[in-house]
Image 1: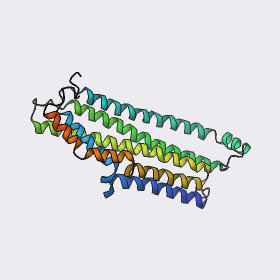
Image 2: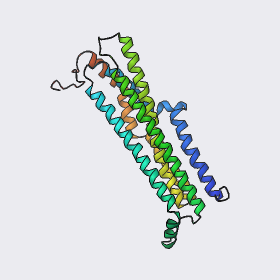
Image 3: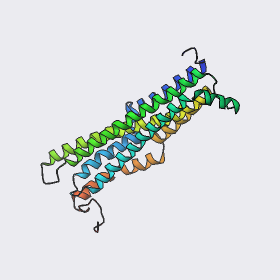
Amino acid sequence: MLDTLSLLDGLSVIWFLIAWFGFNFLIDISPLKKKTLSSTMELYRRAWMRTMTTRQVRIMDTAIMSGLQQGTAFFASTALIAIGGSFALLDSTDTILQLAGDLSIPIEQSRTLWEIKVLGLMLILAYAFFKFGWAYRLFNYSSIIMGSVPEAGRADEAVINAISDNAAELNVLAGRHFNRGQRAFFFAIAFLAWFAGPIAFAGTTLAVLLVLLRRQFASRSRKAVLAAVSGHHLEASAAARDGEYTETGSSNPFT
């Protein structure tokens, strides 16, 4: 297999792995993770669970959780469909190479190299599926624990907060696995460029990396979240405790 890969192919694959795993390290482990959009949203996930304990009717919370689960299930099923498509692509190698040659499409004419690329794409998609599948399960666990949180006044406040914090922690973990699955999808797009050659592969990997870095550190959404996080959700929680919000969790008295 190593004889099949050219020097440029090998370097582009190494660059791809450095970009992908380096980005995961930067966002999930490095000290800079506290400045990311994902980290800020984790604060909101925990604040959400604490705010939920102040509501007697938690229809809104269950609706949000249902939406998170449905979105995760959609991506998991998409990953499975993409894996199936990759199997079909692998089974039609000769036909595709012949068609590409007839149309003068710049695709590597080595059958072995083509199969390596397809198998690599399948591995990325399989990784994404496992991440989405585990995220779905964690959202499920979080919703169960969320349902076990007693209403305010029905149990000691410390007990209520401890259970809601457990639900929040599972929600945060589910969000992290979901994000990793999405990153796999994004980098799978960069991997697709390898079919057009190693230079296109390296260039697309750089483009995807820059887009993801901008979203985490310099996007408008991050600025909006940071502007709101400076006490806004804490003030909303305090208002709910003071009776400004109704039992349904809405400020509208007619809901």
